[in-house]
Amino acid sequence: MTFYACAVGCVLLGLAALFEEPWFLIPHFSLTARLCLLYLGLFGTALGYTWFTNVVQEIGAARTAPFINLTPISGVLFGALILHERLEWAVLFGGLVTIAGVMMTIYAGRK
Image (cartoon, rainbow, N blue to C red; front, side):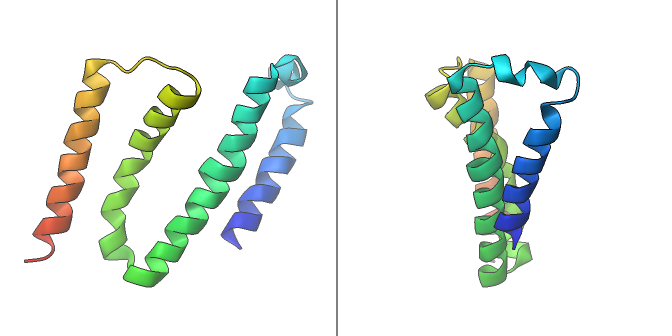
């Protein structure tokens, strides 16, 4: 249900964006930009939330909650891989601190 809600929302918001300012520029976007928007709507949002919901059902909300902090890290990494964005040292350090915090949260809960 989550996947279908996100997929329909992606399509409907995409259609609505064609007629709103400043989104009327979407027809002038490159193919790469259009594919990135489609990827973000379907895979990054719909599939990601669907998987997260399934994991919450399997292992519970308390054990799943720390992993939501990894979402920005995956966004930055995919931005670097797909869009060839530059990764600054501060971003890499912040990612490592975030991963360390998630690990500490997970292992602290096992005591």
